[in-house]
Image 1 (tube, helix red, strand yellow):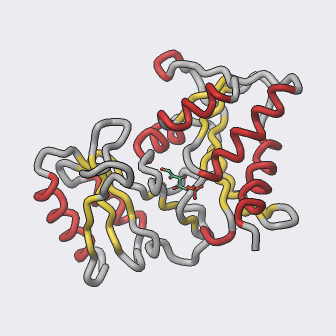
Image 2: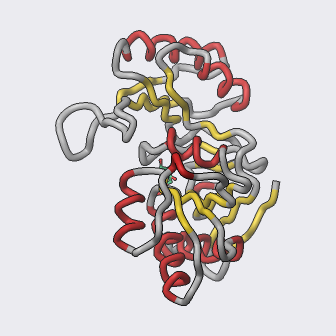
Length: 233
Ligand code: 5RP
């Protein structure tokens, strides 16, 4: 299996949803990177779009590829967002935030007319939860917030959850998001009822956002080595 080819084929299939004149939300991560590179090639061929990045990393990548960006405060309408996912199930619910960009990703996906998710087959699961669920929290009192999140996970039928403060891979200390927050990675194994957990996590003081994207994706594209499979919700 060739993961990069699968991601690239998913990204290539997402180009079919792009039209001249669109404002497009650009996702974050290695699969979104493929889409950005392919989009840049289309732009070189004459496609005209404007883009809104979902992270500083994606902003830098878009600038490197000469993609015109529009300031988020100036955006009237986002026609399409194309982003990756850490897990996607058969109804299109997602876990996102492995790259730590879930807050801007959710804000931009939620403001979009159409969210297209691109992924390789390893991301397509029957039950969400094997991938640790990222929860973005404010640094103040994060230990108390983590305890409350632990309780919510247990109340949602998750046995022996583990709530871990994400560490920065490059530097010593916690990982800091683009919004200046921490991420708590919640090891759940399986999430029995993702919509219920999503609404309960939102109610915990200190939680800024969580990585459960419920009923947001309208299209899921799973790339294969020879093409892609498209699911519509
Ligand atoms: C970043 C994300 C990414 O979309 C997710 O982590 C998937 O990344 P990749 O395409 O590298 O597997 O949610 O916050």
